[in-house]
Length: 269
Length: 294
Image (tube, rainbow over all chains, first blue to last red; front, side):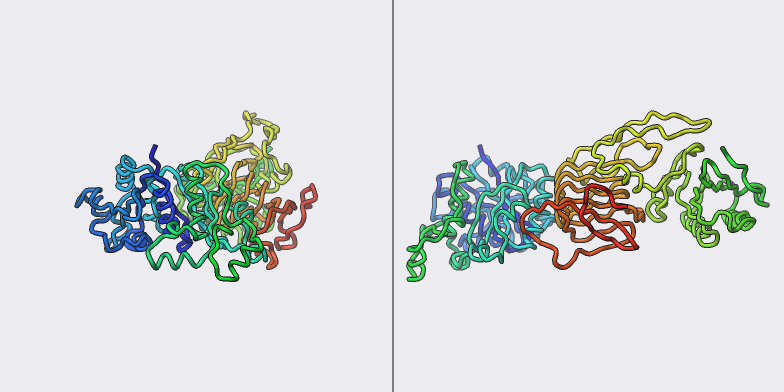
C-alpha cells in the first residue's frame, strides 16, 4: 500500500529538505522502496543535500512535459538499494506545473514505490498547492520559535482545508538546554498551540550543516544524534509503536564526561 | 398606532414622515428627482427642526432607484442638519443593500414592516442573554393591532467545519432582530476568519493570525490569541469574553485596543475568564465575575 507524504512547513529554512532527505534515506535503509521528490522548482536543494547534483540529466518538469520518461529522470542513490531522487528543475519556476500534473506524477510513482516523500517549498502559493496535490499524508516541520509556529499554524489550516488526514508534527532544531532555562518553547507549549500529534523531535546540531556540505545525510552516520532522531521518525512512520523521543532523555554523568572529553556520543539527547 | 404624519411637503408628497410604533420612517417618492427629494426633506424637517433631534429613522426607498452617492448625501443631510440618525433602510435593490450595510452601516429590510417594534441595537439584545449557545426560540414580541404572528424558530446552528466558508447564517429574521448566532466547534487557525452578522461562539482557541469579526458579541470558550472585533457595525455595546485572554488586537465598535506589553506569550493554558467592553469611551478588560458588566 503506497503512500505519498508531503513534508511542509510554511516558513522557510526550518528543515524541510533536510527532513525529506533523511527520512528518505531512513526508509530506504529499512527496506522500503522510496522516492524523494523535490517540488521546489527554481530553487532546488534536495539534490545537493543528498549529494546527487552532479548526476542530474532530467528533472520533474521534463517528465511532466513529456520530454523524457519518469524512469530516465529518477536518480538512484548508490549508497543504498532502495532510494531514488526525482529532482526539480532549476531554470524554471513554480508556475511550470499544475496541481493536476503533479497528482498524475505522484500516482505514477506510487505504482513503483512504497513511499513517496514530497519535499514542499516554503510558502502557501503555487508551490505548496502543487506539492499537496498528490499527497496522502502530511508532516509539518517547525522550529520552536514564534514565527515558525505561526506559519506552521497557517499551513496546518491549509492542509486541513485540503482535506488531508490530520498532519503530524516534527519539532526541529530543538535545544534542550534552552528549553530548560525557559528561553525556548517546550514540546507542550508547541503542541498546545498547534494541536496535532507529534511524530519527531530533532535536536539542533552541527551535524546538519556538516552533512549538508558533504552531501551525505546524517542518517548514514550511526553515531549521529540527528541521524538517530530521523531514524526514529521513520520507525514511527512505518508504524512501530512507542518509539522513544531522542531529545527528551536526560544526560547521564558519563555521557557528559565523554562529551567533555570530545569522544563520540551515541543517541544521548 | 400611527400618529398622523406632519404636513406633507410642497412637492406633493415626494417625502413623507410618519411615526409607526415609535419608529420614525421617512418615505421617499419613487418618481421624484433626487435634488427635489433633498430639498423636500430639508423643507419638511425645517418645519419642525428640533422635533426629531436625536431620533433614529428609517428610510423607505421601496423600489426607487437611488444612487449610492445620493443615498449617502441624504443620510448625512439628516444627520448633520437635523440630528436624525438613519439606522435602517427599506429597499429591494441588492447592490444598494450591500453598499448600505458595508459603507453606511445600515440595516436593510426588503419588506416594509409596518408593525415592527422599535429595533434595539443588535449587541445589547444579545448581551441580555449571555452565552446563549442554544438560544430558546424568541418569545413573540409583536404586539398591537394588526400584528402578524410569525412563526419563530431558533436560528440554525452551523457546525464548525468550514468556518472559512460560512459567513452568513441561514437563520430566519427574528422579530427582535439580532439573536443570530454562529457556533464554531473547533479552534481557528492562523489565517482563518469568521465574519458574521450576529453573535459568535467559538468552542476552541483563536490562534494568532486568525480573526473573528461579528456585529454582535464574541464568546470564546478557549484562548483568544488572535484578533476579535465585536460590534463590527460600529456598535460600542459589543462584548468579548474569553477564558484565556491574550489577543493580538481587540476591537469593539470603532475602538481598537492593544494588549498590555507584559501579556504572556506562549506558556501553558490558563483559565481565567475575562470580558472586554467599552466603558468611558475606551475598551477595558476585567475579570468576568459571572455576570455581565453594567
